[in-house]
Amino acid sequence: MSTGHRHGSDVPDVAALHTEAASRLADVGQRFTDNRRQLVDALAHADHPLSIPELLQATGDVAQSSAYRNLSVLERAGVVAKVVTNDEWARYELTEDLTGHHHHLVCGSCGAVRDVVVPGDVEEHLDRALSVLAKREGFVLQHHRLDLVGVCKKCS
Amino acid sequence: MSTGHRHGSDVPDVAALHTEAASRLADVGQRFTDNRRQLVDALAHADHPLSIPELLQATGDVAQSSAYRNLSVLERAGVVAKVVTNDEWARYELTEDLTGHHHHLVCGSCGAVRDVVVPGDVEEHLDRALSVLAKREGFVLQHHRLDLVGVCKKCS
DNA sequence: ATGAGTGCAAAGGCTTTGCATTAGG
DNA sequence: CCTAATGCAAAGCCTTTGCACTCAT
Image 1 (cartoon, each protein chain N blue to C red):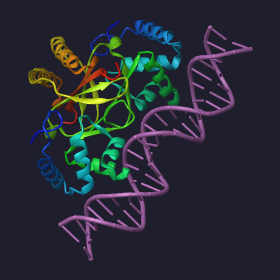
Image 2 (cartoon, rainbow over the protein chains, first blue to last red; image 1 turned 60 degrees about the horizontal axis):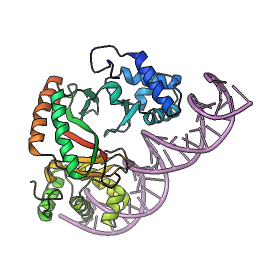
Image 3 (cartoon, rainbow over the protein chains, first blue to last red; image 1 turned 90 degrees about the vertical axis):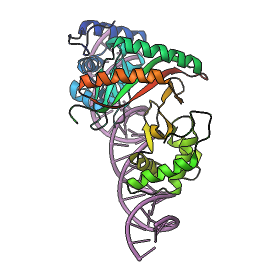
Image 4 (cartoon, rainbow over the protein chains, first blue to last red; image 1 turned 45 degrees about the vertical axis):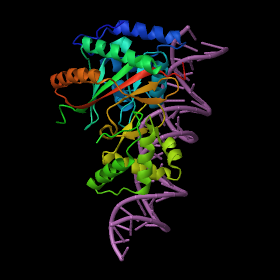
């Protein structure tokens, strides 16, 4: 799936997302509980990876330890991915096969991270070049991460 | 400067590196002490970003707190850059204007990170595309970070 | 009933900081 | 001499874990 989500102007298909999340959790022997649904929904409605404080605020009544534990479970289930940035907290986002491939605008000034989609032809060109490179290095390439580092609109 | 270093087969120009490091430290009112020289040398001879444990081992007799403090100073001076990965420790490398622009092969299995250089034409193509994108987003682009995530030769 | 999930509090582990000592200009 | 730098130990802070309670099946 790659139904509409925050990158476009369309509304996220919440039902489909829930079904898929539940399915992936079931695959690893886990339930789609209310806490987990709240975390997934918060991530689905954000246009950038969320930190734990942001997630706690967005969900309202999820205990911090539960948030960490459930994010870990969701990560193992392939529903969310941890995004490491230079700021103090880890950030989380839905996996790319749920939201679509994208990259990040990282503001070196305030630390803000925003999702951005790179034109398809650029991605293809890049992927071809990286495949060749990986093969040459004896490296099994799974995917690439690309961050644009600079100063966001608000800080400049 | 961008004298020879670990990416090529050439030997790092230690003297020039020291001069440049000392100069940049002086610019921010800091000295090029023996501990800092040891850290810089260790980074110059590695072919991948080093974690604190690796740096402590490579330097031998630098106290952990001094390593952290000096890396912070070197970072402010623009001599080293912190590289954030998904593993437990932060990693450090010399800044790209000292070593040349490069990217990282990140092994999702063992966490190893190795430097890799992408062909110039690919970089140019990418930079042009990203400039257009950044302008459209009202973002002042300074540089990009590109990681190849997969499985390294040793783990596959 | 029975195991998964939850929440509070305590523990862990990387990183930072306080402070007395040492070294460089 | 005098300030910067160093090293040890203690403190911080994000994250993980222990444990008893609750909920769903």
